[in-house]
Image 1 (cartoon, one colour):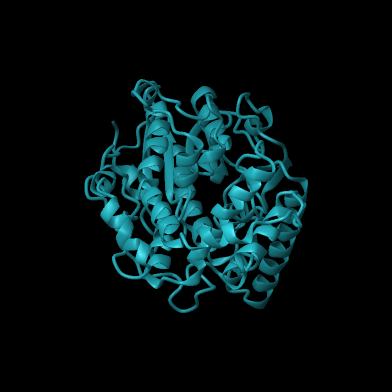
Image 2 (cartoon, helix red, strand yellow):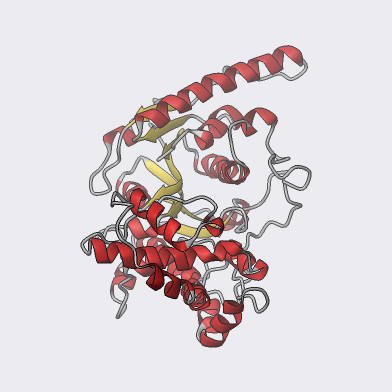
Length: 418
């Protein structure tokens, strides 16, 4: 199975449920008799590198990124673009890639760092025209900043011209090949283009599209994909992909489980220990769901945008705002007594959510194992590496794949640059 242990017993990436803090934490632990099994079967999410935090000096600024590359970028994203960008650079060098294709690039933070910070040739593909236009503005702003820095400090010599990412507005259909994704920007006349596909938290089926392009296109020789939003995977089509997982009895993963696998386990454990009022959100959201289903039963799993300062709202105020966010009449008559009865069940709701969250790493392991096996069944070399700090970035496993063997070089990909 390559270099990846399929089942990691005693994974240090797992966070045990809190026994102190919120009253529901102990209740969840007593009820969760299967927690040890789930803990033993999940992939480790603890990175192999052990270096001081890059945010010790300033919680908003990574000490391992220069100031121009931190501007307009939140701390979580600073950590992600630096770690994934450095891995992509190493993988590109090891596989002789001529071009990196960043799929689902958003505002272009990763593409910008890879091209202007690491010197890679990058094509950036994003379906939202507004995000692409903002990315291009940020490219020009960064170029101007770097040029000013060179003039202020002439001792710093930059060899060769700087090339920002080449941005393309294009939606990638997960069921079909995207020719734009495969078109080279620069091609060596001797050997042709050698592409490396990457995606930082490519949503739902977009991560699956990267795998399919890698597996069926000879010009794509390497892959570095970090997935997310598993609840948006097509069913069937997005999971299962491998023959092995498809052959498992009961391999189906309903929406509820896939959605749960996207939650931040480490952050939630900390919230339980602090026992803060923010935990009330679960109870309020459950009450809102009962009102929605009573008013419009066909409206299933509506996305409710974040309602700020929930802990300061009465439950009926939260429900009214939630109804408005899903397009329903916020002035619907409410049974306030029933809502108060829901609120009295807060501890039970938190306990239920905690139990569901205990399974989250195991569900994510099955989804990512399926992707790993899908590539390995076709003879490719693939491995899953935890490259982000899970406290900063919960979806921290990158699927790395190559057409040729890398041997022990795989282990170098997750190390920290000096």
